[in-house]
Image (cartoon, rainbow, N blue to C red):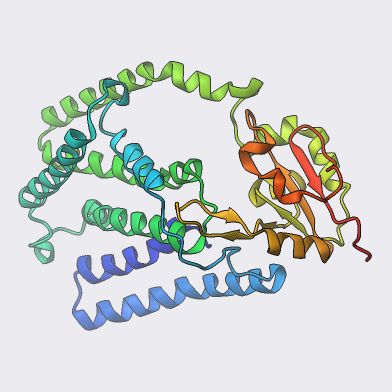
Length: 337
């Protein structure tokens, strides 16, 4: 209920009702209000539940920490990789303008040939006829939501998370391209040819990236199935986490993975913005939490070391941390319950 893709769908659906319904304006406005109320009430109740249960509506720290230049570049590179084979090494100054011209050109050609948006009141009742246009509205809104989340709500967003956040955009882009190709390829023979070409391109890409996919799946000595892989293989880590006192809150660098392993809620590391756009740990806030009885749990994933995810110098003066393999655990020995 608080995923960015879900929240972005609300204004997209509202615009869909406003632009694509074949009803008078007053009726469309009423439908938008009904839809908005029905959609926002469950979200509001869920946010209230989160606040009461965990002290935060969405577990985010509000503050201005603009997306770094490196992360913006990685985001653009990832999007461009959907259309260009990255191994070809095409320069940015060629890829970006070509991508913009190709996108605008295809959508403009499609809109002119489709003509449904202009003559929608005369169109037959085809619910999916508006899908390409709604996807075209969804994509920029969702990309804006990613930027807003990283720049205002979540300073700990990593490059890996950005790529994961782009998954709805990738799926939407694929659906949009299918819709456009299907609509433009009028006639049975053209559509069969379009399907054959698409399948051949898909099989070619799967084979082209097969080695990369295998290397990713079997990285670090285990199948790369995300949290399922961690749960199946991190039995010692899970036992260690479950042995921690349930009366003491946990602060961690990876709240999602910690919840997947132990079923416990936790607080993210307190962060401060920095000049280079990469947030740093707020040492004073962290030490204050530990003095109040919180436990610090640092999690390292496959192929990572502690120095990759946490600055150990922040804990100078604390006793040697406990931990096993992928866990490092700090606590304040002076704390008395």
